[in-house]
Picture 1 (spheres, rainbow, N blue to C red):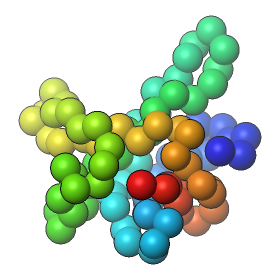
Picture 2: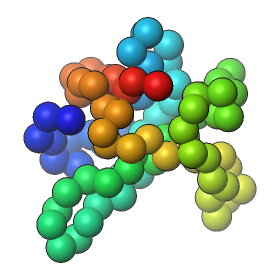
Picture 3: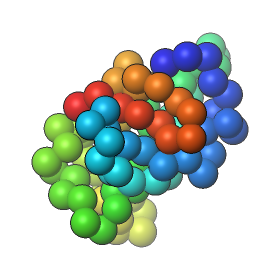
Length: 85
């Protein structure tokens, strides 16, 4: 992923390299010692099957499904965060 500040990612949608909209950025995991971004935590859109995306999923404290997207899968960041499956 190009050098991006985590705050620059806030509010961006996440889409697959094929153009399919996957969800909205929920949170970012960072290594506080190095400042590097770890995983992007994505809240999938209602019409998206999270288990079909090929990424690890988890349930957050509000009982919502969250998709973990490794930063290594990010292809581009512009208006959207584009990820490779």
